[in-house]
Amino acid sequence: MSDSEQDYGSTLLKRINSTPVSKEEIFEVLTEIHELDEEERDWEGRAITIIRLHSEEPGKAESLQFRIEALARLITNEGTSGWTLPLPNGAVATQHSVFSAAGVEPLIKKDGQLEFDRERFFEKALEFEDVDVIG
Image 1 (tube, rainbow, N blue to C red):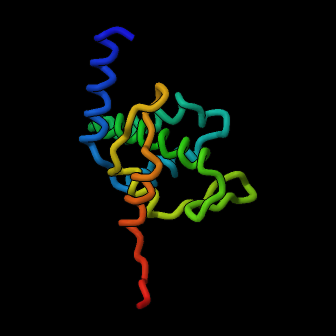
Image 2 (tube, helix red, strand yellow; image 1 turned 30 degrees about the vertical axis):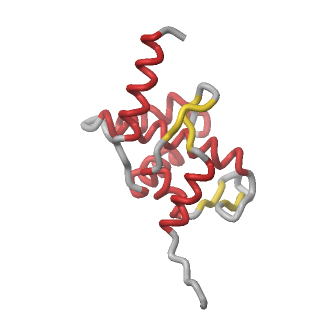
Image 3 (tube, rainbow, N blue to C red; image 1 turned 90 degrees about the horizontal axis):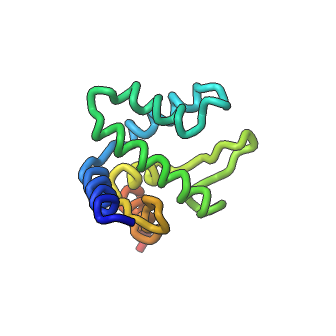
């Protein structure tokens, strides 16, 4: 990898991590993507949807794109856990706190991808949970 590619990657990561998004903005994007025909839900279709929704805020659009992609990989890699519930239609129900964490938790570069650090991510998700503690 050349120095200019490393600089670009570092700059991209800094931009994304300095641009938090809300769970509502993530929900808006996912709702719009869900409305697409199945064959349009590829990377290009998702990117076009995000750009259409946030054309006035390119930094926000970029952050949403990478954060949603990283969240999808995390959920896929996590499998069935206490945070997700696979549904018969192929969708995966996910707790709201996971989306809140995805909007603010920093991404890291891992194996050539921008990812969430699993442990830190779920610690952040717990911060968003309303948990009643007894005792």
